[in-house]
Length: 285
Image (cartoon, rainbow, N blue to C red):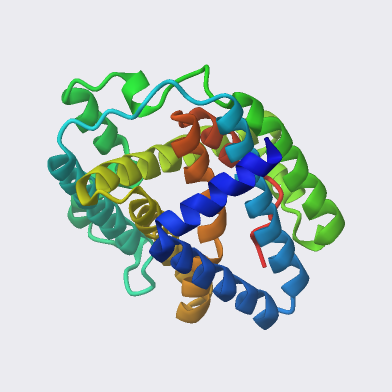
């Protein structure tokens, strides 16, 4: 099965070489970021862990193929909904975090007009639209029987690699302190970050993939969109656009891994749990 997994991955590389090339370029930029920040060892450990996790995902999926599929009824229309949701959500982030806008003292009527856009940032509005279109929760990846066992080795190896390779970037204690305890940290991580972001990416990669007839490219594009939605907040913290851009690129590999897990298991729950329990900071360098 190990050999079959290697052969499967090699076949996928040949099948969509453009996507593979984009992934390689992203990995090289991540190594450059590690070099720039004098954490090149961590950057290699991070990228190695992401490939190892993809291997676990493929190994599991080949031995226990998912029987479900993601239903896409109208790829063009639903891709448009996804893009509009991204744009409106990004507009909210610009208003909320732009140094040129004082959010706390913004005109109350302007803030009231902008505030509903937060429904596209998380993205609650996109979920409501798809439910209105008669999609069931299972159609949107809420499936309990697919791939949950993957959460254990991925979370464990992430913690161990971080602990032994780059303990200085371990964020567990800071997250627990910030949220007030492990229960609050899990709730915030799984619901606020994991569920909203993995749902957003699932919708993007499935709808765009069906529309352009290229899942690999749609997978990469969607994760890039997701990654750069973090840029406004990061830019607001130190007003360094270069670092905000590099920071967005740096999280693309882990975003690709999470989204690939969704694709192979046909469920968002494994990626939601892995994302929501990502307390380690391996990608922070």
